[in-house]
Length: 188
Image (cartoon, rainbow, N blue to C red; front, side, top):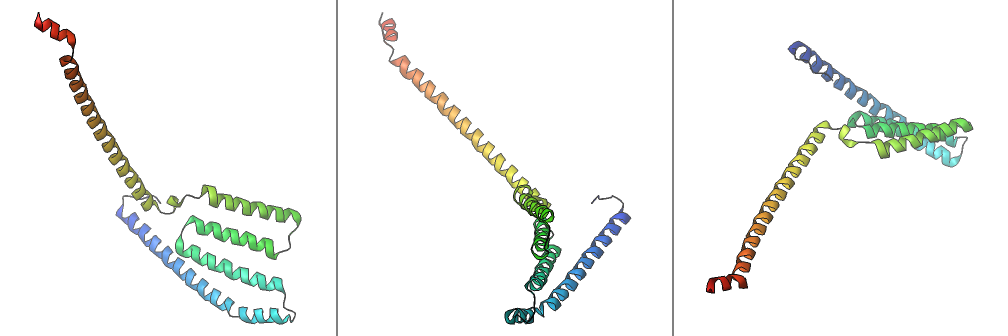
């Protein structure tokens, strides 16, 4: 969302964001009520399935999948992340493939769609896209760590260079005192 400098436009944007969040909450509440109402006949349908009084298994599965998709949609309303969107799409495609008796081409397209959704979820999903504030904190933390590592390396190099210089100086003093030519030149 583009941020404008005009206070009037900023207030309008803030108002629209608040209204949209309230509408989203209202939709979620309506969805909760609808899911609860749809769940009421499930135990009776399960009992009918047990007795096999003409109750169809595919009808029971269709209703169960609808409830699961409704719950996933509710999660999507609450969480606002890419992963929940992929889950809703995955359940929807799987429901369509399992419940409806599809032709071979349609079933193949459904399998390809599920494979693509799994690939998106596995390889293209970047959790940082969901929370930009956390991305900033992670980048700041990474930058802080890099700075500390660079400081430690430079301190090590300075220490190593000073030790090396001291060792060379001591070595040159030791070799000068042990040099037999310097003793002969001093005696003559």
